[in-house]
Length: 146
Image (cartoon, rainbow, N blue to C red; front, top):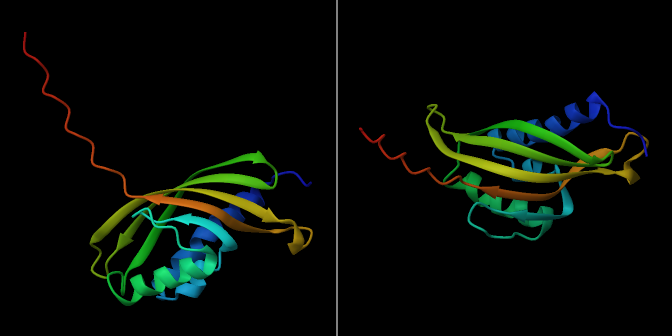
């Protein structure tokens, strides 16, 4: 097994760059191409579409309706390598309307694996993805006056 390099960080970041391009183009198949064929995906609503095909089908519906003409601003917050061929990735994303309005903010935790069958370098693919919309935090109580 080869060691982790800075190139791995770049390739993993590239998965989210590719997702953002597919999103901006309204191309659900391009968006979903970064996921493993059998990816375990959980949507912000707790739905579990079956694999890459289910991810593409669900996003195709979104791109034709509520998220038509939007873009995805995805920011990788951290990458951790429990093993050289496995990474956990925390990502903050914002769905942005064509006028610049923020429509949704999400947080995802993804498991990314290097595909050993893809040659010496091995392509990275997202094998598990849990997406959620963070709940608003309650306001802090006012400081007591003494």
